[in-house]
Amino acid sequence: MFLSRWLRGIIGVQEDILDAVPTQRNRYTALGALVLTGAAMTTLSAGAALWFALPGARWTIALVAPVWALFVYSLDRTFVAAPRDRRTPARIIARLALATAIGVVIAEPLLLAVFQTSVDQQVAQNRRTAVAELEQAVRTCNRLFPPPPADGCAALRLDSLDAALATREQLARFRTEATALKAEIDRIIVRMDRLQALARAECTGDDGPGLTGSAGEGPNCRNLRAEADRYQRETDLIGKQNRLRNLNRLITANEMTFDNQSASLALRTDAATTSELNRERAEQASGGLLERLRAFDDLSAESPHLFVAGLALRLLFISLQLLPVLVRVLMGVTPYDRLVHHREKEQINRWIAANTRIADDVFGLLEAQQRRLIEEIPIHATRGGERD
Image (cartoon, rainbow, N blue to C red):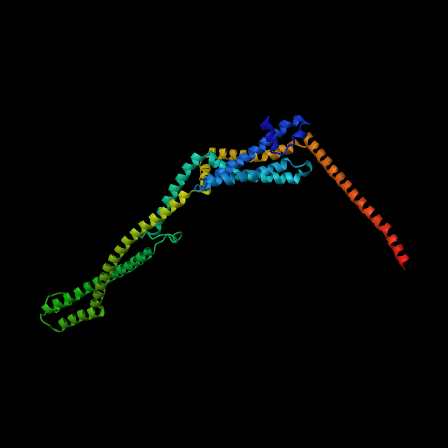
């Protein structure tokens, strides 16, 4: 009995009026229970949202959740207890839209609480995937072979990578130049060897095509030697050999530099990877409501059954917010509403009558005062004439 009266009291039912229509008690008791259920669901939703969103400040649940529930309760009570002439179609539609929006908001934290075990597992999986992808990204953005991609690496690229890549490019140019120069020198040497061999054969008197067969330093011998010397000068063989030696020294020096830079880059990459992973894990440790919502979306995308269950629960929570409004609208104008309306009219009429009497009394006093003033004017005038 006390519980029923209390449930009716939270929606503003006047028991002395309801006593005149006792058949309406069950209706308004159920309506009060619906309003209380909506407020309770709001409290649970706010508590769940703060529990997941602020793991380090969960004491705020005791402050925020009741305030949020009081807000929703006040909206429901205002509509339920409103006079019948204030429940216009426009206000009903606006209240239904607001109740739907509130239902959508409170549904998500409650879903996370219902599927907490699965969501926790998905959050852990997402975190492991994020850590692995971050580690792969750091190492990809700082690799030497093959070169790192141009896009998506600006924040992860190390300065030492640029130096190592520059050294590698320079080393590649030196090697290409040295290879081409060595091939050219080899071709010159082969031709030089043929010219020098021909000059020796002529000077020693060997027989063969283009040879005189006469030993000694004759004109042909001197001409062939001069041709070999001239070819060596024209091709700058000595200069090319010196350049090749310099290139080989530069290649050796750059190889040592590149090896040192590669080793340093590997150490820096390991350090950067560790730093980025620690930062990522620190951010993950703080958790958050959005992270859990994304995890639930991932689960819903992977499991059609979970998607259907989540949709059904969302509709249920939204319906619980809509029920007080819908039930009150469907109840229409009840005998209790008519009695309340009649009492309100009586109270207004009594107030008007009381204030009318007060106004009449005030006007009566003012008229009496006016008459006394009018009666006193001739008396003063007569006394003035006698003195003259």
